[in-house]
Length: 362
Image (cartoon, rainbow, N blue to C red):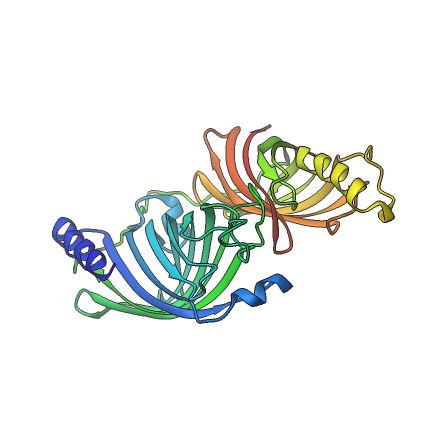
């Protein structure tokens, strides 16, 4: 593993080293703790997780309006290796995309990264029944970090130190799926491939008001998931939403809406529950459908935006989950009216669905 990291770094330096190159390689060592969020997690935590982070990012120069608006962020790709120091959990390997945003004279870095993870030791009924965190080999990986960053500590070599929060979950595509959250202290270096990189904002851009009238959105989110009973089977879901949005400035839009949840795995769960727990007096014919109302915020970057919503079930005949749900994810605007998205819907820390969406804005 260490030989691979060193070889990758050498290849990167040889390929990217040239004048006026906007690319940066970051490498970090991380060590921390698991954050148990359910009682069945505590027996899995018997060591301090360690990790290695490697990323290649491109510095922005202000040639596009959104780059100036967000104080010249970086964007690129990452690789994350994490050893949980727990035999049931094993190790995870993740790849994905990231943004680095800067504050406080560019010495405070906020990192946001999203990708796909592969785990070496998922749940297995016979060989690894203790691992209720990872029900499948492939999962989603989300990382949020904050660090002190000095990109030119010595010539082209920089230094950073901070904290990184990691989350792994398959969105209950397959049970079990309690997921894992960790916080890790982060210490690392970066190498800038150009010592004379310059940022020059496009001065021809004209300041304008980004406020807009209210727009209306229709969105269909779908995918497959499994109810909490292991081996109960995967079923499709259809989450149909309608909401109004109001853009209030360059970066923010507010949302208010309602949605219908047609989650077929819950229908199967109701049938199971009515038989397994007769004392609960749950009829097998109980309606599985749910209706929610929600408020949300959209952080607009360029064609990509970050979406966060929190909702409440106003109709939920089968009350097994808490009545509050939340959703976070990415949205991409193909045109001004058509958008797609990838989101995760949860009840606090417990994921219910990984949603792939398509929508229309009028």
